[in-house]
Amino acid sequence: MIDLNKVTASWMKSEDGWLIAPAELTWIGEGSHLKIGNECQLGNECQLGNECQLGDWCRLGDGCLLGNECQLGDGCQLGDGCRLGDGCQLGDNASAPVDIGYADGYRKCVCNVKGVAYIGAGCRWFCLADAIEHWSDKNDRDMTNCLMMSAIHIAAVKGWSHE
Image 1 (cartoon, rainbow, N blue to C red):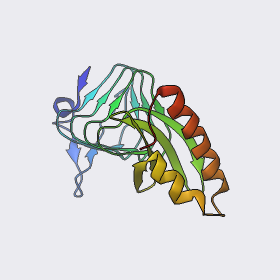
Image 2: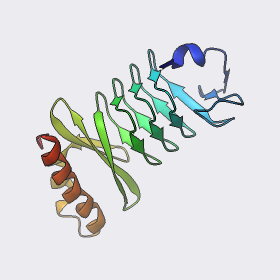
Image 3: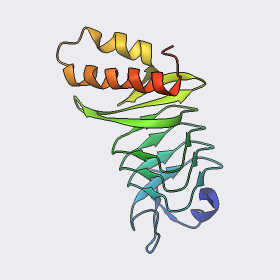
């Protein structure tokens, strides 16, 4: 397990607060930007994309892969082998995320927050019931509604409630 606060302490910082990755790291590309909160931990053989932001107390298990511009809220827990695509957004205390795809301009993920299924999509972070209601009357969001059907089934398999 890598303590990111210790590893990045000597990295160059940009004017806007991004840490800039040096060469020869296996878990992030040279010159990539990263913002990390306090007490973040990174498992073995993980890979972080450029411009990832990790909130306080995030823990990524072994073999996690985050795409570019992923944002994780405080206390996020990603299990071993978790894969999240570019632009994934998770709120505070999210765990066991499942990337359900990219549609209508935004990446969608479903995850667990204290037994409730939550959806992260762009700047939105809400329980599954609210997400379904939000998109149900939007005729131009057919693909998003298809992804919500997937989220419903994933939540059922995982035993997460909708609200």
